[in-house]
Image 1 (cartoon, one colour):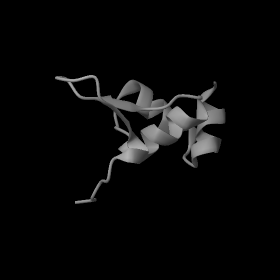
Image 2 (tube, one colour):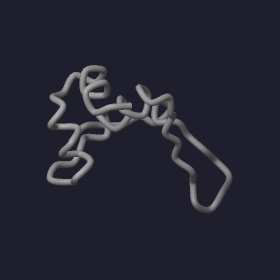
Image 3 (cartoon, rainbow, N blue to C red):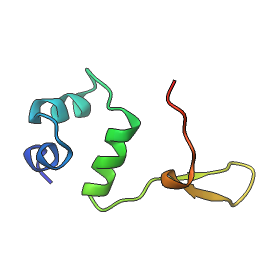
Length: 64
């Protein structure tokens, strides 16, 4: 996908997506989830010492 397509789908400017790629700024985890969803991916968390896998929607998070 092009930056313009991703930026439109997640609601940020195209140059913001460019900066995510070149690392002057880092996206929030919420933004990473949006990008993954737009591109057809799911984010999983895998526990190191077991075979348990969790999707981000299954994890309760608390904003600090």
